[in-house]
Picture 1 (cartoon, rainbow, N blue to C red):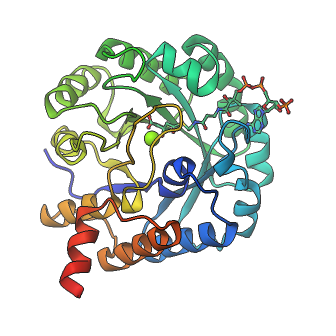
Picture 2: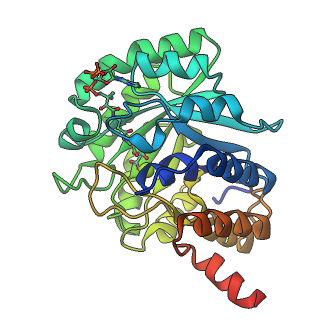
Length: 300
Ligand code: HMG
Ligand code: MG
Protein backbone atom coordinates (compact mmCIF):
# COMPACT_ATOMS: atom_id res chain seq x y z
CA UNK A 1 0.00 0.00 0.00
CA UNK A 2 1.29 3.45 -0.92
CA UNK A 3 1.65 6.03 1.87
CA UNK A 4 -0.75 9.00 1.62
CA UNK A 5 1.95 11.45 2.63
CA UNK A 6 5.73 11.39 2.60
CA UNK A 7 8.31 13.16 4.75
CA UNK A 8 11.22 14.43 2.68
CA UNK A 9 14.57 14.65 4.43
CA UNK A 10 16.53 17.29 2.55
CA UNK A 11 20.21 16.34 2.65
CA UNK A 12 21.55 18.77 0.04
CA UNK A 13 23.31 21.15 2.44
CA UNK A 14 25.21 18.21 3.97
CA UNK A 15 25.36 15.21 1.60
CA UNK A 16 25.31 17.55 -1.38
CA UNK A 17 27.77 20.23 -0.38
CA UNK A 18 30.22 17.81 1.28
CA UNK A 19 31.10 16.59 -2.18
CA UNK A 20 31.51 19.91 -3.96
CA UNK A 21 35.07 20.88 -4.88
CA UNK A 22 34.64 24.38 -3.55
CA UNK A 23 33.92 25.14 0.07
CA UNK A 24 30.95 27.47 -0.02
CA UNK A 25 31.03 30.58 2.14
CA UNK A 26 28.70 30.57 5.09
CA UNK A 27 26.31 33.14 3.61
CA UNK A 28 25.62 30.96 0.55
CA UNK A 29 24.90 27.91 2.71
CA UNK A 30 22.62 29.93 4.97
CA UNK A 31 20.73 31.29 1.99
CA UNK A 32 20.26 27.79 0.55
CA UNK A 33 18.94 26.42 3.86
CA UNK A 34 16.57 29.35 4.27
CA UNK A 35 15.21 28.94 0.75
CA UNK A 36 14.68 25.22 1.36
CA UNK A 37 12.69 25.97 4.52
CA UNK A 38 10.69 28.62 2.62
CA UNK A 39 9.85 25.96 0.02
CA UNK A 40 8.22 23.88 2.77
CA UNK A 41 10.95 21.41 3.72
CA UNK A 42 10.47 20.48 7.36
CA UNK A 43 13.59 18.41 7.88
CA UNK A 44 16.94 19.73 6.68
CA UNK A 45 20.29 18.05 7.29
CA UNK A 46 22.31 21.22 7.48
CA UNK A 47 25.86 20.12 8.28
CA UNK A 48 28.15 17.61 9.92
CA UNK A 49 30.53 17.58 12.87
CA UNK A 50 33.28 15.44 11.39
CA UNK A 51 37.01 15.89 11.11
CA UNK A 52 37.76 18.97 8.95
CA UNK A 53 40.78 17.06 7.63
CA UNK A 54 38.45 14.40 6.27
CA UNK A 55 35.68 16.66 4.95
CA UNK A 56 36.82 20.31 4.76
CA UNK A 57 33.52 21.34 3.12
CA UNK A 58 31.71 20.85 6.44
CA UNK A 59 34.29 22.64 8.59
CA UNK A 60 32.06 25.66 9.15
CA UNK A 61 29.10 23.67 10.51
CA UNK A 62 29.44 25.20 13.98
CA UNK A 63 29.19 28.79 12.70
CA UNK A 64 26.42 27.70 10.34
CA UNK A 65 24.22 26.39 13.15
CA UNK A 66 24.89 29.48 15.23
CA UNK A 67 23.78 31.77 12.42
CA UNK A 68 20.84 29.74 11.10
CA UNK A 69 17.60 31.61 10.72
CA UNK A 70 15.63 28.80 12.34
CA UNK A 71 12.07 28.66 11.09
CA UNK A 72 9.47 27.19 13.41
CA UNK A 73 8.41 23.64 12.65
CA UNK A 74 11.65 22.87 10.82
CA UNK A 75 14.19 20.39 12.19
CA UNK A 76 17.82 21.26 11.42
CA UNK A 77 20.02 18.19 11.91
CA UNK A 78 23.68 17.23 11.64
CA UNK A 79 25.90 14.17 11.39
CA UNK A 80 27.91 13.23 14.49
CA UNK A 81 30.27 10.24 14.04
CA UNK A 82 31.67 10.22 17.59
CA UNK A 83 31.54 11.93 21.01
CA UNK A 84 33.75 14.77 19.77
CA UNK A 85 31.19 15.50 17.03
CA UNK A 86 28.26 15.19 19.40
CA UNK A 87 29.79 17.63 21.91
CA UNK A 88 30.25 20.19 19.12
CA UNK A 89 26.70 19.59 17.87
CA UNK A 90 25.28 20.16 21.34
CA UNK A 91 27.22 23.41 21.71
CA UNK A 92 25.93 24.51 18.30
CA UNK A 93 22.36 23.70 19.41
CA UNK A 94 21.38 21.32 16.62
CA UNK A 95 17.82 19.97 16.70
CA UNK A 96 18.68 16.37 15.94
CA UNK A 97 21.77 14.27 15.19
CA UNK A 98 22.55 11.31 12.98
CA UNK A 99 25.18 8.61 13.26
CA UNK A 100 26.37 6.82 10.15
CA UNK A 101 27.48 3.23 9.86
CA UNK A 102 27.75 0.80 6.96
CA UNK A 103 26.88 -2.71 5.87
CA UNK A 104 30.31 -2.98 4.21
CA UNK A 105 33.52 -3.44 6.22
CA UNK A 106 35.75 -1.75 3.66
CA UNK A 107 33.44 1.26 3.27
CA UNK A 108 33.31 1.62 7.06
CA UNK A 109 37.14 1.69 7.19
CA UNK A 110 37.41 4.28 4.41
CA UNK A 111 34.59 6.48 5.65
CA UNK A 112 35.03 6.51 9.42
CA UNK A 113 38.35 4.70 9.89
CA UNK A 114 37.06 1.72 11.87
CA UNK A 115 35.37 -1.66 11.44
CA UNK A 116 31.59 -2.05 11.65
CA UNK A 117 31.86 -3.60 15.12
CA UNK A 118 34.10 -0.75 16.33
CA UNK A 119 31.72 1.81 14.83
CA UNK A 120 28.79 0.34 16.75
CA UNK A 121 30.79 0.48 19.99
CA UNK A 122 31.63 4.11 19.20
CA UNK A 123 27.99 4.98 18.46
CA UNK A 124 26.68 3.55 21.72
CA UNK A 125 27.74 6.42 24.02
CA UNK A 126 26.92 8.96 21.29
CA UNK A 127 23.32 7.74 21.10
CA UNK A 128 23.02 7.48 24.87
CA UNK A 129 24.40 10.97 25.51
CA UNK A 130 22.36 12.54 22.72
CA UNK A 131 19.12 11.05 24.04
CA UNK A 132 20.04 12.06 27.61
CA UNK A 133 20.40 15.61 26.28
CA UNK A 134 17.01 15.55 24.61
CA UNK A 135 18.14 14.90 21.03
CA UNK A 136 16.63 12.24 18.80
CA UNK A 137 19.14 10.15 16.86
CA UNK A 138 18.72 9.07 13.27
CA UNK A 139 20.93 6.30 11.86
CA UNK A 140 22.34 5.71 8.41
CA UNK A 141 23.46 2.39 7.01
CA UNK A 142 25.58 2.89 3.88
CA UNK A 143 26.16 0.53 0.97
CA UNK A 144 22.88 -1.36 1.41
CA UNK A 145 22.69 -2.27 -2.28
CA UNK A 146 26.38 -2.58 -3.06
CA UNK A 147 29.80 -1.27 -2.10
CA UNK A 148 32.40 0.50 -4.25
CA UNK A 149 35.15 -1.67 -2.71
CA UNK A 150 33.45 -5.02 -1.97
CA UNK A 151 30.70 -5.20 -4.60
CA UNK A 152 27.68 -7.23 -3.49
CA UNK A 153 26.34 -6.73 0.03
CA UNK A 154 23.90 -9.29 1.40
CA UNK A 155 20.49 -8.16 2.68
CA UNK A 156 21.25 -10.22 5.82
CA UNK A 157 24.23 -7.99 6.61
CA UNK A 158 22.08 -4.87 6.17
CA UNK A 159 19.43 -6.41 8.43
CA UNK A 160 21.98 -7.16 11.14
CA UNK A 161 23.46 -3.63 11.27
CA UNK A 162 20.03 -1.98 10.97
CA UNK A 163 18.63 -4.03 13.85
CA UNK A 164 21.67 -3.26 16.01
CA UNK A 165 21.41 0.48 15.40
CA UNK A 166 17.67 0.47 16.15
CA UNK A 167 18.24 -1.53 19.33
CA UNK A 168 20.85 1.04 20.40
CA UNK A 169 18.25 3.81 20.25
CA UNK A 170 18.06 5.23 16.72
CA UNK A 171 14.44 6.15 15.99
CA UNK A 172 14.82 5.49 12.26
CA UNK A 173 17.40 3.98 9.91
CA UNK A 174 18.00 5.54 6.54
CA UNK A 175 19.02 2.88 4.04
CA UNK A 176 21.79 4.31 1.87
CA UNK A 177 22.45 3.21 -1.68
CA UNK A 178 25.65 5.21 -1.36
CA UNK A 179 26.94 4.52 -4.86
CA UNK A 180 23.58 4.33 -6.60
CA UNK A 181 24.12 0.83 -8.00
CA UNK A 182 20.79 -0.60 -6.85
CA UNK A 183 17.98 -1.65 -9.15
CA UNK A 184 14.27 -2.07 -8.41
CA UNK A 185 14.59 -5.86 -8.07
CA UNK A 186 17.50 -5.54 -5.63
CA UNK A 187 15.62 -2.89 -3.67
CA UNK A 188 12.57 -5.13 -3.43
CA UNK A 189 14.64 -8.10 -2.26
CA UNK A 190 16.34 -5.98 0.41
CA UNK A 191 13.06 -4.54 1.69
CA UNK A 192 11.33 -7.94 1.64
CA UNK A 193 14.09 -9.21 3.93
CA UNK A 194 14.13 -6.18 6.25
CA UNK A 195 10.37 -5.88 6.60
CA UNK A 196 10.06 -9.43 7.90
CA UNK A 197 11.81 -8.18 11.03
CA UNK A 198 11.50 -4.38 11.15
CA UNK A 199 8.43 -2.12 11.21
CA UNK A 200 8.16 -0.02 8.06
CA UNK A 201 7.96 3.27 10.01
CA UNK A 202 11.51 2.65 11.24
CA UNK A 203 12.98 2.84 7.73
CA UNK A 204 13.82 5.62 5.27
CA UNK A 205 15.14 5.48 1.70
CA UNK A 206 18.38 7.27 0.75
CA UNK A 207 19.21 6.72 -2.90
CA UNK A 208 22.03 8.21 -4.93
CA UNK A 209 21.36 8.45 -8.65
CA UNK A 210 24.67 7.35 -10.20
CA UNK A 211 23.07 4.82 -12.54
CA UNK A 212 19.77 6.69 -12.96
CA UNK A 213 17.85 4.13 -10.87
CA UNK A 214 16.91 6.26 -7.89
CA UNK A 215 13.30 7.17 -8.76
CA UNK A 216 12.53 3.60 -9.81
CA UNK A 217 13.98 2.36 -6.52
CA UNK A 218 12.00 4.95 -4.58
CA UNK A 219 8.80 3.77 -6.23
CA UNK A 220 9.58 0.26 -4.95
CA UNK A 221 10.24 1.68 -1.48
CA UNK A 222 6.88 3.51 -1.57
CA UNK A 223 5.12 0.34 -2.67
CA UNK A 224 6.65 -1.37 0.35
CA UNK A 225 5.10 1.37 2.53
CA UNK A 226 8.19 3.49 3.24
CA UNK A 227 7.12 7.06 3.98
CA UNK A 228 10.46 8.86 4.52
CA UNK A 229 12.66 9.74 1.56
CA UNK A 230 16.05 11.47 1.62
CA UNK A 231 16.90 13.66 -1.34
CA UNK A 232 19.07 16.56 -2.32
CA UNK A 233 17.96 19.76 -4.03
CA UNK A 234 19.23 19.92 -7.64
CA UNK A 235 20.68 16.43 -7.13
CA UNK A 236 23.70 17.94 -5.38
CA UNK A 237 26.31 15.72 -3.91
CA UNK A 238 27.87 12.30 -3.69
CA UNK A 239 30.20 10.80 -1.14
CA UNK A 240 33.88 11.69 -0.75
CA UNK A 241 34.64 8.07 0.25
CA UNK A 242 32.75 6.46 -2.63
CA UNK A 243 34.58 7.42 -5.80
CA UNK A 244 32.31 8.05 -8.76
CA UNK A 245 29.15 8.23 -6.67
CA UNK A 246 26.77 10.83 -8.07
CA UNK A 247 24.51 13.05 -6.04
CA UNK A 248 21.39 12.03 -4.22
CA UNK A 249 18.17 11.80 -6.15
CA UNK A 250 17.02 15.37 -6.79
CA UNK A 251 14.33 16.59 -4.37
CA UNK A 252 12.53 18.33 -7.26
CA UNK A 253 12.21 14.99 -9.12
CA UNK A 254 10.92 13.17 -6.04
CA UNK A 255 8.36 15.90 -5.30
CA UNK A 256 7.16 15.94 -8.92
CA UNK A 257 6.68 12.17 -8.86
CA UNK A 258 4.87 12.25 -5.52
CA UNK A 259 2.62 15.11 -6.69
CA UNK A 260 1.70 12.98 -9.69
CA UNK A 261 0.83 10.09 -7.38
CA UNK A 262 -1.37 12.27 -5.12
CA UNK A 263 1.04 11.72 -2.23
CA UNK A 264 1.25 14.81 -0.01
CA UNK A 265 4.67 16.38 0.74
CA UNK A 266 3.78 19.94 1.71
CA UNK A 267 6.49 21.26 -0.60
CA UNK A 268 6.10 24.15 -3.02
CA UNK A 269 7.74 22.82 -6.20
CA UNK A 270 8.42 26.16 -7.98
CA UNK A 271 10.00 27.56 -4.80
CA UNK A 272 12.14 24.43 -4.51
CA UNK A 273 13.23 24.68 -8.15
CA UNK A 274 14.21 28.28 -7.56
CA UNK A 275 16.30 27.31 -4.48
CA UNK A 276 18.04 24.69 -6.62
CA UNK A 277 18.72 27.15 -9.42
CA UNK A 278 20.23 29.67 -7.01
CA UNK A 279 22.66 27.22 -5.46
CA UNK A 280 23.70 25.82 -8.85
CA UNK A 281 24.30 29.34 -10.12
CA UNK A 282 26.49 29.93 -7.06
CA UNK A 283 28.41 26.70 -7.74
CA UNK A 284 28.63 27.36 -11.49
CA UNK A 285 27.07 23.97 -12.27
CA UNK A 286 23.96 22.71 -14.03
CA UNK A 287 21.13 21.26 -11.96
CA UNK A 288 21.01 17.47 -12.01
CA UNK A 289 17.23 17.59 -11.61
CA UNK A 290 15.31 16.69 -14.76
CA UNK A 291 12.25 18.44 -13.35
CA UNK A 292 14.20 21.65 -12.66
CA UNK A 293 15.61 21.53 -16.20
CA UNK A 294 12.16 20.99 -17.70
CA UNK A 295 10.51 23.67 -15.60
CA UNK A 296 13.14 26.27 -16.49
CA UNK A 297 12.70 25.53 -20.21
CA UNK A 298 8.91 25.86 -19.91
CA UNK A 299 9.36 29.23 -18.12
CA UNK A 300 11.55 30.76 -20.87
P1 HMG B 1 40.10 9.29 13.01
O1 HMG B 1 41.30 9.90 12.36
O2 HMG B 1 40.10 7.81 13.19
O3 HMG B 1 39.77 10.00 14.42
O4 HMG B 1 38.81 9.71 12.20
P2 HMG B 1 40.57 10.23 15.72
O5 HMG B 1 39.60 10.11 16.84
O6 HMG B 1 41.81 9.39 15.75
O7 HMG B 1 40.99 11.79 15.60
C1 HMG B 1 41.89 12.24 14.63
C2 HMG B 1 41.79 13.76 14.54
O8 HMG B 1 40.48 14.16 14.13
C3 HMG B 1 42.03 14.47 15.85
O9 HMG B 1 42.61 15.74 15.55
C4 HMG B 1 40.66 14.68 16.40
O10 HMG B 1 40.58 15.78 17.28
C5 HMG B 1 39.89 15.00 15.13
P3 HMG B 1 44.20 15.98 15.53
O11 HMG B 1 44.64 15.60 16.92
O12 HMG B 1 44.78 15.08 14.47
O13 HMG B 1 44.31 17.44 15.20
N1 HMG B 1 38.46 14.65 15.23
C6 HMG B 1 37.46 15.50 14.98
N2 HMG B 1 37.44 16.79 14.59
C7 HMG B 1 36.23 17.36 14.43
N3 HMG B 1 35.06 16.71 14.61
C8 HMG B 1 35.05 15.42 14.99
C9 HMG B 1 36.28 14.78 15.19
N4 HMG B 1 36.61 13.53 15.55
C10 HMG B 1 37.95 13.47 15.58
N5 HMG B 1 33.89 14.79 15.18
C11 HMG B 1 36.47 10.27 12.08
C12 HMG B 1 37.52 9.28 12.60
C13 HMG B 1 35.12 9.62 12.25
C14 HMG B 1 36.56 11.55 12.89
C15 HMG B 1 36.79 10.57 10.59
O14 HMG B 1 36.92 9.36 9.93
C16 HMG B 1 35.74 11.40 9.95
O15 HMG B 1 35.57 12.57 10.27
N6 HMG B 1 34.99 10.81 9.00
C17 HMG B 1 33.87 11.52 8.39
C18 HMG B 1 33.64 11.03 7.02
C19 HMG B 1 32.42 11.70 6.45
O16 HMG B 1 31.96 12.72 6.91
N7 HMG B 1 31.89 11.08 5.39
C20 HMG B 1 30.74 11.58 4.70
C21 HMG B 1 29.47 11.39 5.47
S1 HMG B 1 28.81 9.74 5.36
C22 HMG B 1 27.91 9.73 3.89
O17 HMG B 1 27.97 10.65 3.12
C23 HMG B 1 26.96 8.58 3.65
C24 HMG B 1 25.49 8.97 3.89
O18 HMG B 1 25.09 10.03 3.06
C25 HMG B 1 24.58 7.76 3.62
C26 HMG B 1 24.85 7.10 2.25
O19 HMG B 1 24.77 7.77 1.20
O20 HMG B 1 25.11 5.90 2.29
C27 HMG B 1 25.28 9.38 5.36
MG1 MG C 1 24.48 9.83 0.98
